[in-house]
Amino acid sequence: MWSLFIAPSILRGRFPDDHYYEHFCSLVKILNLCLQFEISEADIDEIESEIRKWVVDYERCVFPFLFQKCEG
Image 1 (tube, rainbow, N blue to C red):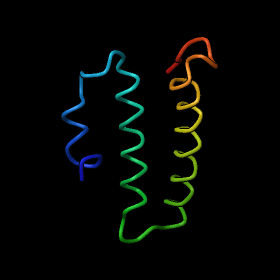
Image 2: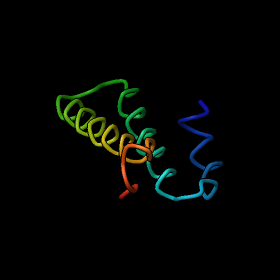
Image 3: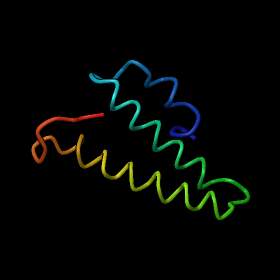
Image 4: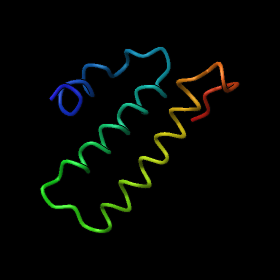
């Protein structure tokens, strides 16, 4: 409930860098796709693609000691 409905509006403008908010919203998008009542083959492909992008972005931005700079 928090992640899907409340957090996107509450957290807007609260991170030191907007990229973190956008990253969180990408996760919300993935969660919404996964929680649909019916999931098509195209939805599965999109979910897989979005998760891959999200993980790459997570590694680039959440572990700053491993990477030079978060690039959005």
